[in-house]
View 1 (cartoon, rainbow, N blue to C red):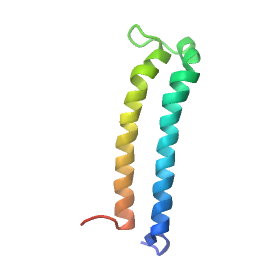
View 2: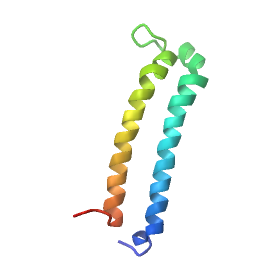
View 3: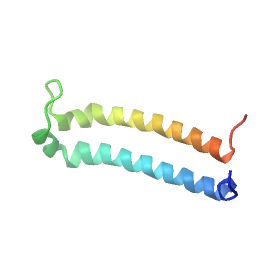
View 4: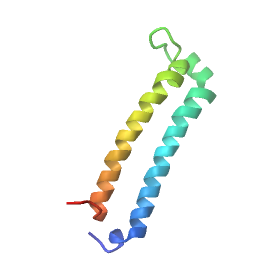
Length: 89
């Protein structure tokens, strides 16, 4: 472990960067894909079941994406905690 990675400021920057990236992905999927690009998605992508793709993204896709973001965030935070020495072990 290098000296620059052991500082609390470096850990805080890594956590902030990870959080902002997760928030950007969440915003993109929930706002852009579900609201702004809904007509485009309906016109250019196939239906899922009997629902247009834009509607499906607004109803189910955003929820599934959010669960995936939560799992990836937890994995990344555990990895950062181990890397910077913030574990109980």
